[in-house]
Length: 99
Image 1 (cartoon, rainbow, N blue to C red):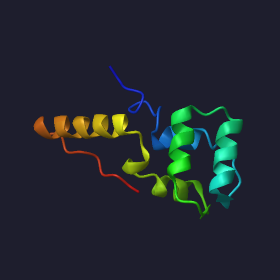
Image 2 (cartoon, rainbow, N blue to C red; image 1 turned 90 degrees about the vertical axis):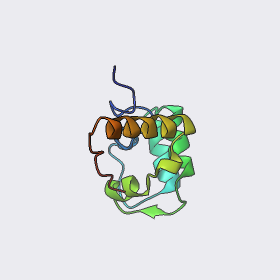
Image 3 (tube, rainbow, N blue to C red; image 1 turned 45 degrees about the vertical axis):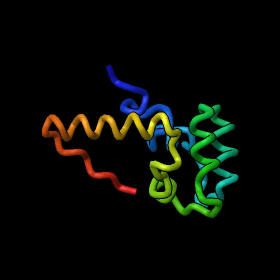
């Protein structure tokens, strides 16, 4: 069964970018928060944006690069780490992460 993280939900970069769709760049952190709330983002997305550095972001790629594992809720960080350990034990090479 796929988790919300695997499907791009929760605090995933895909879900964060989904809830910032249509935002004009450059955008400040407060602009990101305003847009996410306007698009009725899940609280977990709002929380991730609130933990991001308070600065101006030049593009969606810039937002995603600043999206670190530390900005995700602890429950999802542990879940992802467990998935990666499971892949390694099965001989599956983890996908590279682009931050």
